[in-house]
Image (cartoon, rainbow, N blue to C red; front, side, top):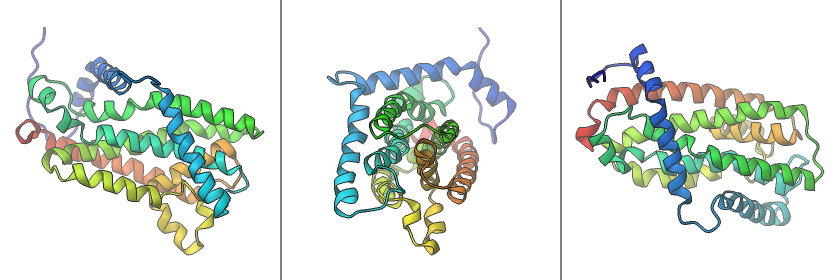
Length: 272
């Protein structure tokens, strides 16, 4: 067996990419382990993935759709809310698992060598299984509400990719910062609560005054939620501004997160 020499590096290189590829099965096993741990000893198992957005969508429908009469861009409000909740729940669930993954798995980091970036990535990609039943449930709701499938659905893979790209960037960045500063363990849950209200889940972006739409679009999840709804429902114009901003921020944030992770990784075992 070829010996592995562990030494710090200042930046990502071809050697790092080769190493990540050679350890790809470790990432797969970490993803499978994360999924098993989440559904271990649960009576309903993966059904919880459907129950959570469904009950939340019903509550939003009663409060915002029925009582406050919030616009849903011509779509049934129940379906409007459910489609917006899909990317939000994927993001928030991945953040809750992956943003503190390095701290939670410190015993693994200190004893076994593997690319450390696999831990936040496994926590992020592990929610792919959650995505499948929610998309199927959205299809059932579209049938019940007689919503036709349009060519907009071709944009759905892009919307899913953008969701996981931004979630990966966020989790890689804050997982390494959480290892150095444990304050993030308390800051991130509070931020998610605030972030939920700043994201157009219960209301469309078009209902916000024109002068404030650009500010709301600086939130990458705004563009992600809007393109999710557009690809599934197709009841409004393509959200060009918010999607362009979300795409640019997600790619830029992902690059920055890799650089920061690589820079701080060399002292990871010491700070843990």
